[in-house]
Image (cartoon, rainbow, N blue to C red; front, side, top):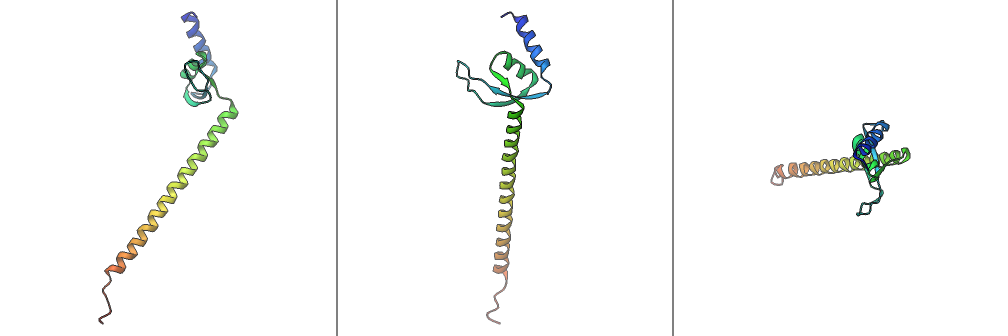
Length: 110
């Protein structure tokens, strides 16, 4: 392939992509590239990957599904972090009670 044609094809592909960042799906390659790996890349990188036949643009359904999965994973991480904070607070309260109890003077001799 002629270099002028190659770079013209990349420029055309880049012009066809509307978003600044786009989700791509890798294709299987003869040198061991795995198919089906999602990546969010810039418009220029996506155009080059598509022209080089290393990836394709993700469909709107795939984008929606991946974003929903990422949101769910983030929600799970937020819940886990909140649970850890609550556990640490409870532990601190229990320790505080124990310390207060230990510091109270003994009243057996009175």
